[in-house]
Image 1 (cartoon, helix red, strand yellow):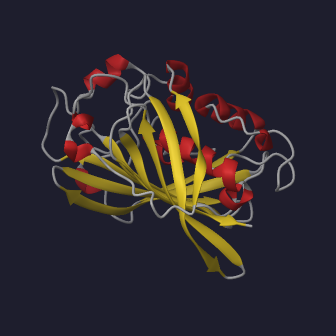
Image 2 (cartoon, rainbow, N blue to C red; image 1 turned 180 degrees about the horizontal axis):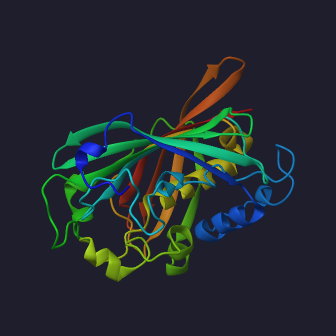
Length: 298
């Protein structure tokens, strides 16, 4: 069934189960799409053998489609100008190369903010023993007013004072080594392909109201995950949390630098959890993704 009515997207609607295996090829595709080539993904790791990147299935939420070429079946009907607005992930156990996993997707919330309405899709990830090992919540925004032509967001918007987001680092306990990545067309096709869409093709982006390729929001979050993995290793992959807002668009030729600092460390049972402010910014300092993350520390 193809969703044609907004009323079909209601809180509690379940989109079923999806099964897959985390093969070395799946991990390799992730590395090609993000540039993250941590050796623990293909060799020894603190968790034993090769461990999958925490976000190896970063876009599982978009796998729930009625047809491979259709929009995700939980999207509202008018996709013109739609944007990924916020993302939450929590990891409860590591995923090793070769693991068989399955997911379930459902609508967790709907709300309106300013000129957009939001659909929140929650995905629960299970291992072969039906244990929940990960949770993701994707907040996708859609224009309230019907619009089918013209530019929705141009490249000047991010220069507005309203789109400036500052981070107070004066209370930093520890600055995390940054990760910088130049985004390329090849990365966009690997990360958001193989079908042409507004995340990897300028013509398709223009058709949806954008002047250039809109890099998929999950990519900057994967860069942040790389930064957290480099610093916390298993403390991130097996127990990390992240909640970020996607505040400015990443265009196809942008260079991003991910940064973070530890704000405080608190006891969590017999473990200690580091709480961080994290963000991704363009070469000129424009913040594109900003929020909080945490990981277990030794």
